[in-house]
Length: 83
View (tube, rainbow, N blue to C red):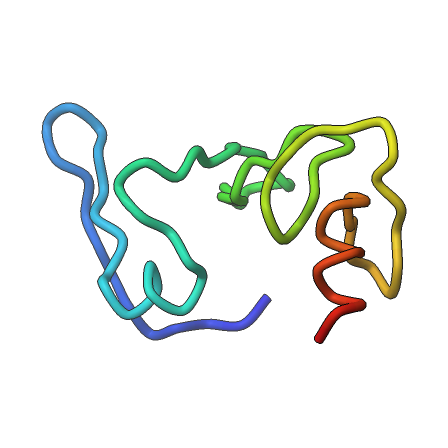
């Protein structure tokens, strides 16, 4: 893991604030669902993505294929091919 050097405390409800720079860098908005994992003594946050969803549009379809680590639906493949 890479340290950001940012230290935050939790409030009395256990909440933390993710810095704007990190939210912007990772494309996280107020509506972005995050999954919470544990890895030993670490807490890991990751943007939630349902299985089979397209990395470009987020749609969950049966025709999604994986290419170089990205999941791409048929509609996005068609749009990409027209570039």
